[in-house]
Length: 335
Ligand code: SAM
Ligand code: SF4
Image (cartoon, rainbow, N blue to C red; front, side, top):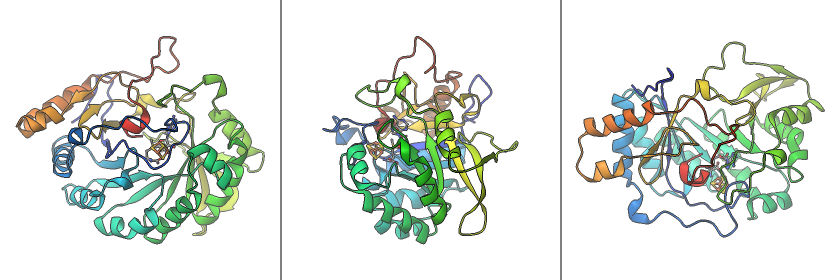
């Protein structure tokens, strides 16, 4: 098992399939994009499936999430999903995407065994979308959401980052839009992971502010009880509001910075170039690619992976005066 010295078990593997993206969200990347990872450094589909197989069959991984960069840009995605869901025991398999191209891809992904998707949507206004993501693609994202629901990749979850004076007035409107369509909305506090190092604590929209904005229009009631477990989102019922299927409507708030959930974290990350990171904010990585390409056995790879997780720190340290942002940006780690 992938245990660390604070008693946590890593069972949720986040696999970044590429650091490239067709959007340029301001909280993630500069307008010109980044210096992308060189192609030969990227793991091939076979290499990825070998590592995922080791994680699932030997190391207790029960959930695999494909992310990036934009994972829909990876041509082999349906094959990677099929290879992952063919493993025994079968891991739950999910995707985090900006939704562009999802309308077209969703049926093939569902067919390959994908269970669920999270789609990032920060605004319903095409102009604001262009300001935030520097591309005019809002309609593609909304089509992607609808396509995912049609293909049965449910419950469709929506991730939203609010930025002050850009889209922070849209919290309630986004909730209404999502609830009407049966999408589960989660707001995520902006984290210091952008390549440009533009994050400022005093400019961040906090979980408390997000809740305040929602409560101006809705009544929220805590919905977690004792069931939150390792889930990062604090979940709320929206009083008197139901999803189209009749279930009580919910909304989540992920206070990564002001309400950290590191003590219950069950995640481990594999970058597109084959490095294990035991935390989004880790300053060290463990190189599985050189082992893979140097002819290592599954045992040797598993051993390095176990050592990487055992060194996990108790928390991300964003709130410590000595905090240093990791050198890899979010898009190259896998959000
Ligand atoms: N491109 C895909 C997408 O946007 O969903 C997957 C990768 S993206 C890095 C994963 C998630 O991280 C998205 O929901 C995005 O909004 C979020 N994200 C990116 N930068 C962030 C930041 N600085 N703070 C908080 N969330 C961030
Ligand atoms: Fe691309 Fe996702 Fe980063 Fe936006 S958040 S630039 S969609 S990787």
